Image (tube, rainbow, N blue to C red):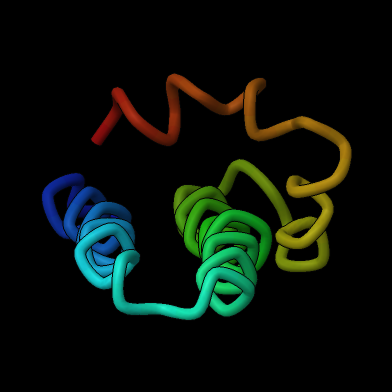
Length: 81
């Protein structure tokens, strides 16, 4: 996903939908969905973007969630095209 606008849309729209429906969801389900967004969806999205930019290998996509390397790639993820 090299288009920054598409990346930001795919990053923000699910979060806005979760916030919008937050009041109508069961609290447990809401927390599970929030955790899935942070740990699964964002890891996949950021890892896929870094892989397509050639900064990490395909095997390292899921490693960025647990070793904090997402911080190391902050500039590549959010500021560069």
